[in-house]
Amino acid sequence: MITIICGTNRNLSNSYIFAKEIEALISSKQESCKVLNLEDLPNDFAFENEVYGNENAPLNLIANEFISGSNKFVFVIPEYNGSFPGVLKSFIDSFSPDRIRGKQALLIGIASGRAGNLRGLDHFTGVMNYLNVHVLPMKVAISYCHTLIDVNSKRVADEKTIELLRQQVEKLIAS
Image 1: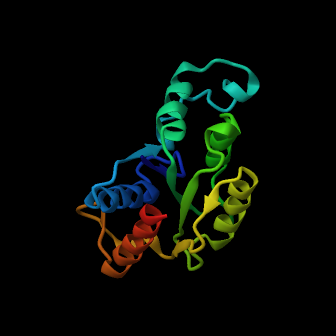
Image 2: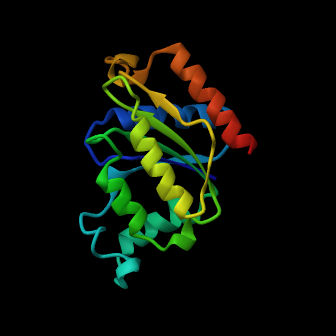
């Protein structure tokens, strides 16, 4: 199972549009996958979680289904203040590291600007390395992401970007 994590809890985010595009690419390869939108996290997840010794049934269900139940991940990570969103770090910090340790991840950075969240991808790679998650070597950095989305269909419309994502998904599946 591959879990695609939309790395923001922002409503109607570009990250979610890219996550859904990646879901379609993975599904087209007859691989099982699902999207976790961080918008769906319980409001109290940052303080009511297993790491703090607190039971949070909705968060536990999410962690079981999307983290423990997967062996590979695709993180779609928007740039927030020169790095990655705090909600993504809080989510990673909300469950036992044993749930993700030893698994694999593909990192996709997106940004409205020109750097494609390269700095945020480097920061998040450090977190993943600390958790002993194997990060695929080529991290995809997508700049000016909003210009690659068709406003009517809410789909990624740039064929070069779709092809780049397809190549990376195939590498994740093959690994």
